Length: 92
Image (cartoon, rainbow, N blue to C red; front, side, top):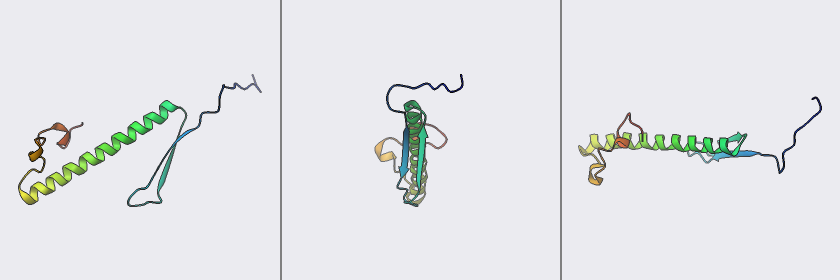
């Protein structure tokens, strides 16, 4: 079968996802190339989960700092202080 090539109808599939604009390093960029639209969606979902987890951990950290300084849980006033997503060591 040497010399044979399969061609697919339509333009070649070329998907990429670029991230830029980091606060600490605005010139820093990442480019993810994907073999399929499904793979690109998987990358997007993984990045969203990572971002959520970063924000969740930041909230927990600052919540604890405020509680140390004031003696009060800042989430208590919203009635959400006992929710599992705001506890360290638990997932959403």
